[in-house]
Length: 129
Image (tube, rainbow, N blue to C red):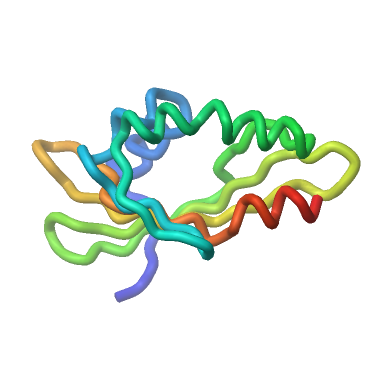
């Protein structure tokens, strides 16, 4: 299997993730992973955690994240991986660069995020800024 450019429906889904109500795009329970932990999370828990994450970014002088690149890998007719790169300006230093991988399931003509893997430990990356 190889990484390929995003298909239009996957690109539209990521655009909705970037600009819309991201928690609504996740499965009822999904796996959230980073180098330090792996936990099962609900969209409600994600929503509750987002203000603290934004505050952590603000304290580190990090602006809004924007997607800079993405690619996909179809696993079968129902599942695919999406790997995306993100960047955010950071006061007084180089931008923050993040990479994440999502496992998506095609369901009823749309997608749901089943797994969100952040390849960077945010606490460490923000402290290093």
